[in-house]
Length: 324
Ligand code: UDP
Image 1 (cartoon, rainbow, N blue to C red):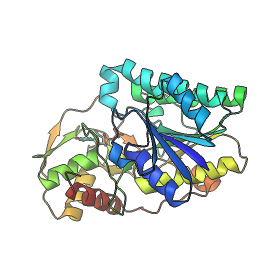
Image 2 (tube, helix red, strand yellow; image 1 turned 60 degrees about the horizontal axis):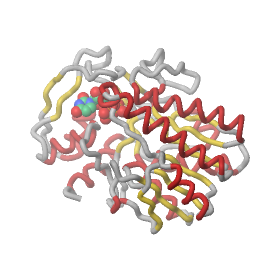
Image 3 (cartoon, helix red, strand yellow; image 1 turned 30 degrees about the vertical axis):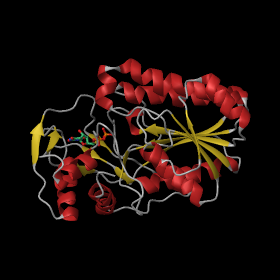
Image 4 (cartoon, rainbow, N blue to C red; image 1 turned 45 degrees about the vertical axis):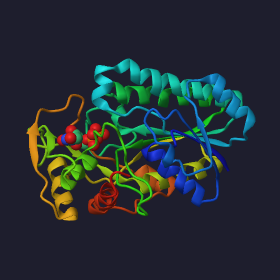
């Protein structure tokens, strides 16, 4: 297939490109490099373009055959989305709409969308399946939910077939060590914990110690980046087989508290990881764990990396390569 990966210079997009190339697809990347890295793009064709720039995207779609778009280009910091919601709606929602409009004009049929567990908000029950009410508690989640809803309307009106994939906590790195997580600023737990292990930072702050969880710290479902990438491969196959548009929750179905992650990282790295307790972070639900049985049943997707220590091990191999 001819696949355009939007946001292919970022963390998840770059790993996706690597797998698509391995599977023999013709891959093109479009990225505005506001967050991504040019050297993380492993395919030959690269367009430094913002997806909101319809004149530029129209040129790309008119000059290249494109069968499917995989879309990873979004801002992802929950805290920033609360203080600066307009940035999130502008890029994540309006930017995606601009891209979809051009796709429709050129009759591109398939769209795989990076969605998030944040569309659900604070869980009414756990683990979270696809029937769970969608009530985001931060603008980041809201900006993604609006796209999910837009996709349903565009499917009805224009026959655009899509799969929305709601990631729980994407983590880990390319097992071959070629790619990894390079957010700036880094806000995610596992890379920050590993920076504390390597000495790049003095300690890790634990945001909140009085949540209603096993040890008072937040619980999340960490999923290996390659397992997420594999779900995208299954999703495009599903659409090409003629199945209807759908949305799936992606996780391991197991929750780990912040303290448990620190302990697992100490085991993997053999280092003592200093931590301090800090205030709760606004917009953080106490527990987010996926029920991924729909993706298991419908897509035939299973996770290879079920031991959180394997996820941390690959992230640690990447951290040890710093400065990448
Ligand atoms: N967290 C933390 N200290 C940090 C970064 C994150 O205690 O320096 C916690 C955060 O409150 C959340 C969990 O770790 O409960 C995972 O956060 P992350 O930002 O990695 O992902 P999110 O769940 O926000 O998508």
